[in-house]
Amino acid sequence: MKKIIKFLALALSLTLLLSACSTQQPRRQALDRQQAMTLAQKHTQMLTDGEYDALVEEFRPEIKGQLDSRTLSRAWRQMTQATGRYQSVHSMEYSDTDGVAVVLVKLKCENGGVALTLSYDAEGKLAGLWLNTAQLEEYQPQSTDSYTETEITVGEMGLKGILTMPKGADSYPVALLVQGSGQTDFNETIGPNRPFMEIAHRLAEKGIASVRVNKRFFQFQDMAAEETLTIYNEYMDDIYARIDWAKENVSDDVYIIGHSQGGMSAAKIALDNDVKGIVMMAGSIRGLEDIILDQNIAALEQMTDISRRDKQRMTRQIQAAVQQVKSLTADTGESILGAPASYWLSLKDLNRADILKNQLEIPVLIMQGTADFQVYYDKDYQYMQNELSGRDNIIFKEYEGLNHLFMPQALPGVIDTSEYMTPNHIPSQVTDDIAAFINGEK
Image (cartoon, rainbow, N blue to C red; front, side):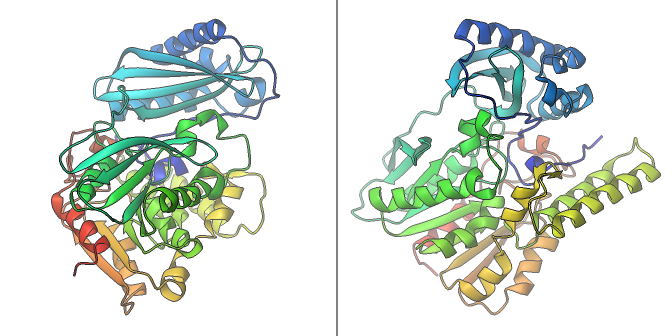
C-alpha cells in the first residue's frame, strides 16, 4: 500500500521530520547526563518494540492530548519504510539546551540510519520526539586535485556547513545551496544519497565555489516549537546570514541554487539580497498547499485497501484544509496540514509568480525532472513555462526520467520516499548545465 503524503514535512522534503511534538519549557535545571541517557534507552526500546501506548504515557500531559499511539505508530512505520527494518542503536549523544535535556539516538537500519531525538523536562517527562533520516558516520571534508573542503559555522546560530573551494583559480563565483522543506543536513542527505555534496563537487571542478549548511531545526531540533514558526525563523533568516558570510569570506558573485521548497524560495531570496542569479531545481510558483493536495490525491489513487467512499471522504478533508490555508489573513494559532497558521501566512511573502514576472531581472535557470512525483512536470514546470513565457532572463531545462532528487528513477511507479533509498547519482548533464549557467556560458 502506498502511504498518503499527508503533512507539510512530507510535502517537498527529502528527509522526514515526523511526530515533532514539543512545547516551550521553563528554564530549569536539566536532567543530568546519566538520567537522560537511561530514559532515552528505555524510550528507544519502547519505540522499536512497538510499545506505542506505553511510550505515549511517558510524554508531558499537554503533549499526550495531541499525540496518540496510532500517530506514533504511523510515524515509525513511515520512517522504517524508507530506511528499512531497525537493527540496533548506533550511538547516543547528550546535550543540555537551555535547561532541556536532549538525547540524540542514532539507529542503524537495513538501508540507512535514523536520528531519534528525545527531549526531557526537569521531571523526566518526554517534551519532544523527532524522527529523521541520518548518516551514521560524520561527514569528513574532502580534498582532490580539483577542490578542497573546509568545515565552517555560519550565523548567530553557529550552523555547521561545508565550504568547497576550487583549486587553481584566483577568483570564482560562489553558489549557496538551499534545501527543500523538512529538516535536512548540509548534504541534503536522504538514505544513501547526498545530492548537495555531488552538486558542490561537480561545480568545484568547473571553477565554482559553494557553501552548504545544515538547516536550523536539523541541527537544533528541540528548538522547532519554541517560537511561532515561519519560513524566516525556519530557514530564510539563516540563508540571508549565509549570503553575508559568503560575500565576506568567499566572493561577491553569489548565486542561489534552491531545491524543492528552496527553489520556491529562491526568487524572494534574490529580491531581498544582491545576488547574481538563481537556479530553481524542482521549484514551483504554485502554492505549497496545492502541491500537497495533488500529492494526497495521487497517493489515495494508489491505495487498494480502503473503500472509494473513504477515499472521497479523505479527499474532501484535505480540500477543506487547503481552502482554509488560502483564506488565512491572520494568525489563528491553529495547525493546518501539519503546520501552524503563522507558517502558511509567511509563505505568502514568497509571492513567486509576481517576483519572477515583474520584479526580478537577474538570470534564472528553472530545472525539472519528468519523473518527479513531488513537484509535477505538467502542473508545476509546464505551468511555469506558460506563466513566465517571454521573460528573456529565464531559461528552462527539463530532464527525461529524473526524479525529485534529479537522479534516474530507481522504482518506477512508486510515489513515496522509498524511491530514494537506492544508491544513485545525479547525471553530469544536470551539474554541467548549472555550471554553464553560473559561468555565463550559452
